[in-house]
Length: 566
View 1 (cartoon, helix red, strand yellow):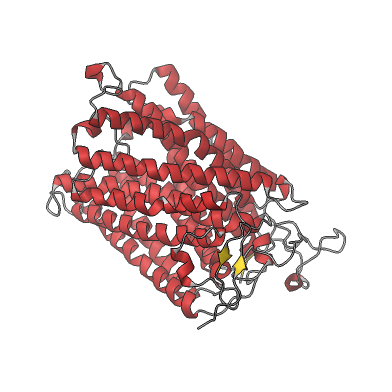
View 2 (cartoon, one colour):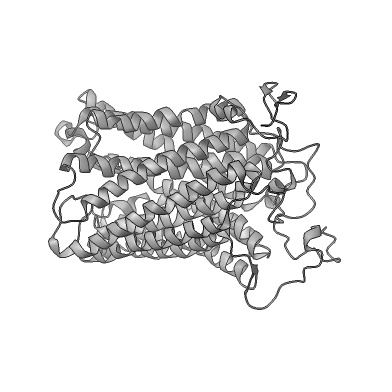
């Protein structure tokens, strides 16, 4: 067992325990650490545990839906299961894992900083997550909220009040954590870049986090306001959203979706950034269209704020307003398409390394494209009215948020695991994880497009027997998806304890986080970090450009022509 060496101090003057070899002792991960790397891993492990819980709830929902009758759980419990499942997956997994985990771990390293701008605020933001999550799950003991993750009134104000109030309180806590994190990311990226690193020199993950953080700070307070007013209606008898007292429930929908549609981009933008960093490394090519990808993130951030009412085409929205939101929603496909075509152009002609990180990266692109195309279909008013609140929406949502976000998070875990732990993950288990996830995911969610087009409503425990066979296929897919997490868990634990040791830069990457030891030392760099190349200058280190070439690529010829797989 490694011994603890001389204590080191961070930039706040606080003592940090560090084992010989630069490893952080395990007890540090259970402390109020202000080290951004510890906080990043705390986020990742904590949110992954909640992901497993949310996945178990989803499996219970699919078990109920394996047969047309309500014969596995009661109807009330079924409502609670899908409500808490959705809330856990959004507020306790995808959002905090994408921004909190990878943002905290990578941003200071990528910009050559010693830590985040506000380390104590950073720790507070994380330590709001566990109590918020435990509080949410505890609602099952008093009757969990059953109005769905949208919590529309009057449904949410006439059901189980204790469970609904706990739901509101927990989401407020998690939203506060998100806002504190957003403040920290914006300040760190704008004010703490290493000397000589302009905005256009940053890795694209930093641009994506910049865009996502702006969205968090603008939209999340609106959700908080809606939930506080809803809480007053629930427990104090006010009538902000109660038409019997002069209120309007549609106002809640406007406030809710002003946050919750941008929330999709808060979830997906960090993943976009991660994929933009992963594909060039494993294709050994420069990113295609750096500025187009960077500025498209900011365009998505802006456009994401003006499309919320496309969720309300059936809520009495006037026709002229429907047209505006339909067009605005379709326009957002333009910057998103720029990213997808840039990724394809990056991979095309590359010397592709089909390892686990690359497989999940390519899987992300293909699954997200399917979700994006169905999103354009839903943006059309006539089609949206036809499939509103059917399983077509469930399929679209999961192709974006699981096929997009979770595939991207998996790619990030395999790519940056050596940096975080100093160990390599097992490739066989990683590829087994990918195959099971890919098969299980598509078996579960692809048939739901058909169910939705045939008119099967969502959020029901009982359905027409004519949908039984397709639902059974979806349930089998969900079981495969549940099993697919085991290779990842085994791989992560086994590799962290006894996996092959990783060098500082096992992928021969060029971004700054790979220019220090794995795992990085306290305050990240020994001495002042020096940027020798652009973040995506793969194959560009020719003698004429004057850009230093990594030694590992010194004899690698410039790439051209069609794809090559190694």
